[in-house]
Length: 483
Ligand code: AMO
Image (cartoon, rainbow, N blue to C red; front, side):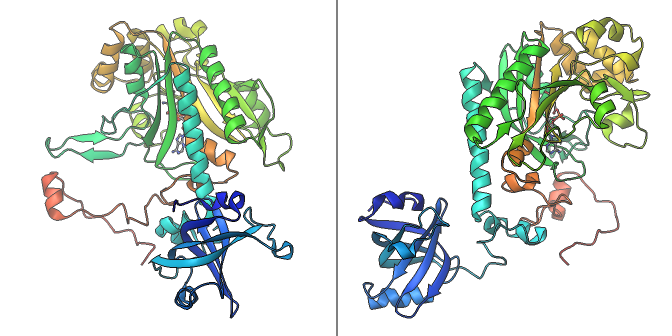
């Protein structure tokens, strides 16, 4: 017999069926035993009674929560007074004929049936595979899949090509701290994990790809917050022969149709999305990503907006020890060193005049108080990019060492290009009404950047360290929160 999903049983009254899943709950009423059986799609009631063999009945008595079972039985309409309006399969139940226990389970450390909001973060993350069994988490992960699939189909139809870019790459001063990977073959040398595919996607434009996208993993060694993970996912895209307007229009269309298809209950407050200059938004709201919802009690309202006309440079914050800030002298970029100024400020950049007054082509897209994306038109001429690094006070030698490959690539007929990256985790969290992006990432890190389930980061064996030419400096050990 073919397996069917629990969600599909309602339309199959009168049929014999096989069902597979987990025991959500068992209620023993003497002559009758009720099991709530759960699979990914839902929950249904299974009944063992006088129609079941003695042996089957006795086996059912032993069932415990989270045991994995297979049953076959008859799908029956429930009597009117037994209908459970709280579950979609509440009008039917399964009269069990056979029962196979496929696996037993220890008692879980928390209740799977609850939504998990009350469980401690530590225990949830340590037993993430059980935490993910909750219907809420299952639904979130499935929504994420739906969003990613929608994006892939939409962009493919518009002539975009998805390209994978390397995870082992080079450490460059881009904004945040890098995660680095020691090289076994080259003693004392390191790869870095990408903070974003920024440089590769621009190189793909030089390569003539014209329209690129990627569902891309990014790595930033920065403090974790509700909307920030050390490892997160972007929808990253880049287009050739475009102006700011083209990139913004395409992304706005994608966001609107994505919401309509993947989260039809949501209402977008204003279309076209309002556009606000950085100056105006900061003067009016004091932040550059205000929550613009007119009714903040309505969880299904989405207030998108574009923030534009950011200053290109800001004064270096000497308290910031990230790579780029530590290297820059007086000025550093506000967003991205590869951005082009707005066309009317190009002369000013090339002449390094009134640096504070140069506006960038950067556009950020905000939603309900979060920045969910940002991008810009790039400097496609090497001399303009070089000027950005000069303004940051980088010596010629440093520019060539860190960015020589980009300057060279741009000198081989790089087309005008621009793009954007969305924080996919943030967007999905907002669509799922979740307050934290951890709720929409299958295996996130904890607030203090650890994986409690795998116990990472972890120490290496001495022989591994030797092979990598590494020696660990004596440091005071941080007490582990699990001990
Ligand atoms: P940016 O650094 O603004 O731009 O990143 C783009 C978007 O990614 C999301 N984001 C994060 N999400 C979760 N955890 C994090 N640690 C995190 N950091 C950023 C945000 C942000 O808007 N290469 C450029 C894009 C471009 O210019 O095309 C870039 O990475 O939602």
